[in-house]
Length: 217
Image 1: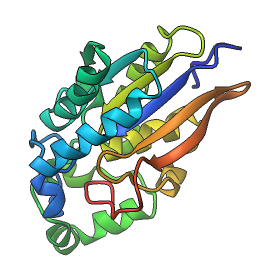
Image 2 (image 1 turned 90 degrees about the vertical axis):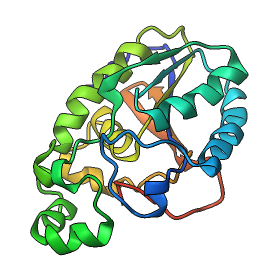
Image 3 (image 1 turned 90 degrees about the horizontal axis):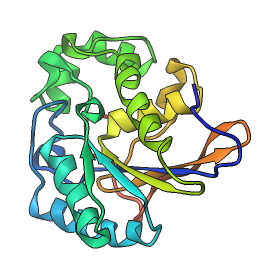
Image 4 (image 1 turned 60 degrees about the vertical axis):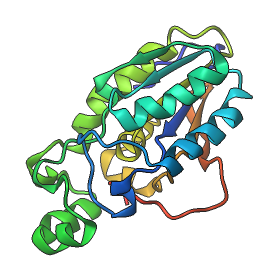
């Protein structure tokens, strides 16, 4: 599944939202609708000015507030409209949502270890990573297919969803997706269109190295 058309030279920028209070607390957010902190807004403001230099043609975003607010910063500097799609939401993780990393490891040790081994796990009774890719990757491809030749799409989403989407678009088997490191807040990855499909051109770009704080670490 690559959705490419020969010679079009399109580019997809997958941009993670800015910092939230739950990121700082290492609390699993999932589909819980958490807002950005003031620092998160500042991160999005700064990153938007860098991404604007790529002259994006379109923006699509998760409808959760932390992603929507991040996308708004880019919309304001580019003048582009934002298309919102619930298919780009973070992984639903059921009973894990709202728990800290330490609480998850303590209460769901077997699930956590199995997930880290790359096994298909419904964390907290929620979605499989492949199910996240099943809903998110088609959204990205749908909007990428509407780009002009050599056009750029910015996708504003969440760490876990971005990782699974990249894995799917690169054609990697699901148990290899863990090999893609997490994204720091307000950093992004870039997929470029090659002769044989999508290629990972940049990963976790946009700042000096910072710890990954979120659901995907």
